[in-house]
Length: 162
Image 1 (cartoon, rainbow, N blue to C red):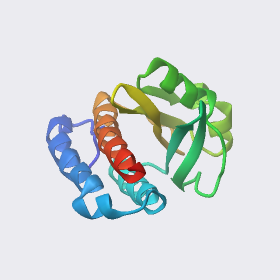
Image 2: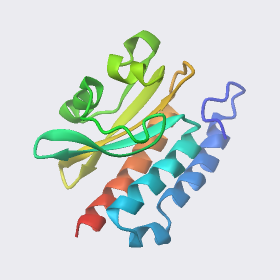
Image 3: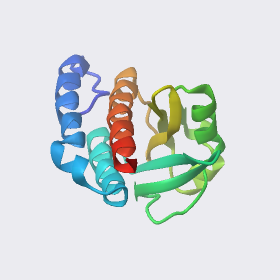
């Protein structure tokens, strides 16, 4: 599935992508601890988005902390970048390509990124971000898919905290 397919098959791919994302939050995941849940979610999201990196950063007392990552950022322990902070502040999805990629993300090898807020009950829990090493323009479909995944992830995160 390539949501950015140039041959006009984007609509058809969106149905397939949504079906793939449904598996992001299958019933088995709801029984995992947060520590086990986040990497599994990110791996599935990264696969569906055909990305090289995926990360979840959660707001902890006013500061974004990376709680889990797969791919290029795996093992990195860092606070949110200015890119992530803009997503939380504006409560809106953002994308960046090549020269617009935050320098901290660029240092990790990312050339294109897209991030969406993790929202729940009117508040922002954090950020879900994916990135690629090859320059890539993320489409509206990519944004919609990531927002869908973020909604499901937010519910799972909130459930894991209960």
